[in-house]
Length: 409
Image (cartoon, helix red, strand yellow):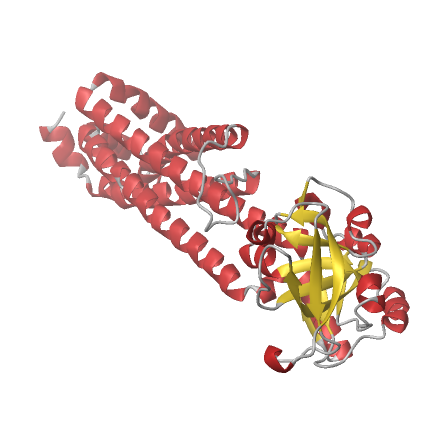
């Protein structure tokens, strides 16, 4: 009952601020400062989460969820290992796909041979199940239609450097065994046709990787090794836990794209947390305007407070009145700020007019809107406002009933 009374009085005091121009002005400043800081905080998390999703999607387009790596200078017995994995982990593994990386040189008539690049041999049918590489082809095509026989996929940067287009011919220079010193290597060559061009948006992949079919590499380049096995997990399976499980079971290296790019993941997290901390501090500063507002309200309502005390209301209940005042103001401003951030986010999603330089993994500013982010920001703003309101509301308990009623009434 006491809480409902405190809430009612708090609302009446907020409405009563309209009668005092000075209090009204401070209330507006308080509202807009919390509104703007909440909007900025929410929008910042939307954007940082958007960057995380874009980078994750880009990496998963070209990398499987998990990759098993054969020990150095050895090969997997894929025909034996595949049924073993699918049998023992049928509740966790959805698809498997073999792959092999081999160093080659791409040569054309118009441009000289370049330094060694990576040739990734894949099974087109299996690769389609574990990655979204098909979506990165220009234009989008099915993998089996573009890497069969001697057809290969090259990156956009390689195509630009060699002035190659789909359907053009080139040559692959390769050695029977990978060697470190190219000057001492004895090269063989085989003709290839550009089946498709990929644009992954990842510089090193578009510049230093070409893709061919596994049968082509095994039969023509005489390399039957399987050095990688891509894994796609079933929904709900934690990739980190399963990665550690495989490493302990088979004593081999297992990686996800996050472990392959630890610096990128660490930079993302650091940037997100630092930005959240800085904007949370700005929100705290905005919430401290509640302190000024409540101090003025307490001075203005000294007589009311003295009367409430005389009628038996406890100090804690009087403090609660002004905490409710700060909460109501912060809730309205916070919700308005979150709604404003959602509106801007939806606008950026529909009209991505903010372009980004090539240093980023996306061409436009990404935005990811989720209710979890909105809830997190709302709780943060509410906590900071309650803290600020409590700090100033404590001064209400120091009001002397006798002196106030004698001199201020």
